[in-house]
Length: 51
Image 1 (cartoon, helix red, strand yellow):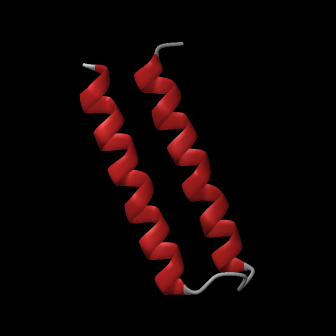
Image 2: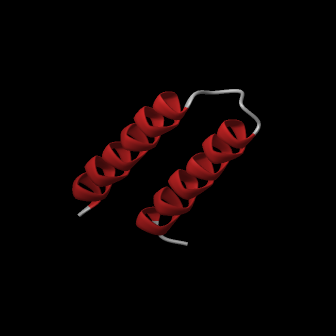
């Protein structure tokens, strides 16, 4: 599996975990949104570096 795909799958899984926490009321909606934005920025940055 290539690096870009691995990073994308990892970020997707982290966002899924954040969603589960949000649904269980273990994090707030704002925390969910902020962490999701951070994961997207991380993925974008690393995909640019990988090219």
